[in-house]
Length: 448
Image (tube, rainbow, N blue to C red):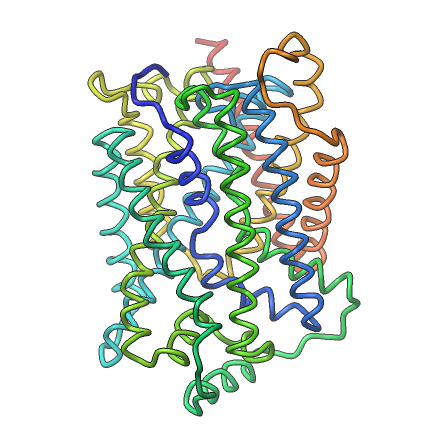
């Protein structure tokens, strides 16, 4: 891709933060707490998740510097392995991302529903509201990278402000609130009891939701050739973005723990709403929910910016039709790829299950991509030795950091396979099916 709409460090950092901070921190804390047998497991999961994210961020920073091309998250698979693996993994990642985007939009609409407590919101109502938000940002992205980047910056300011409000709640007095506590206790009681787990097993299950909340930053290498001075600014943007995310996540989780309580956290879906309701009352919680919905849309916008670039890269290598690499002559927008990805999101939106139902499936698929993509650093180091000393980013503590990152995602994948073996079987079957589709399509091309 070529164009003169390049991203500076601040805009790139905001994209990193936007790709990671979706709805996870406002929702998956409860899921993580459900699987933690004690607070030490819960906080260990978030600390380990942050450290692993930093290891991954530094690994992808070097991959992005050594391989600064648009659609890099696809092309790095093709370069290091085989086009069939690149095709299969990126297809499941695109599906996973579309599902995550749709579910995040639905959860965001759940916060809007809090503004109308007397109105019976159905799943269809929430889906329609979410669809409207997706279509709005589809139109914004059609205007070009600068337009979508400006929207991303504004939305990220809103979202980070909401997170800071949650952190600030720690410093305000609050009452226990009989009503909120009763709701939490009821919700907690509805959770089926789980058999006694070991500390390590509990940590593995808790890390599943944590991994979802920290994930997303690896997609930033898709913007490789659209960042000013990528060798210097890609690692800076990723490092700054992950550092901001780790600090915010740990503080928000401490706020949840202090204000809601560990046991009550396990039954709260809109846990951020409960915190604000306890500290600032119903009106404050309503205002918070309104702005939080728009902050969450930063995740929607970021994925609409990133994923069409993967489709561009796949088209550029001939694994999908050339029309997916077609750009608007004026602003460089990948119109066909953006449109198809948006339609995919809308289709999934009306068939997607709840956050908890698709969480394990999404993360299991991501485990394949995380381990395989980060492992490419070993081949890239050998193949691009001539770039050493030319100003590119080169991580310290190699190969320890990428190995820690890969081992952790293997641990998470094994935890999912133990907890929900059917999910693991389906995920593996989907990956294999896409590889078969690739080989069949190649045979048809040869025959033609």
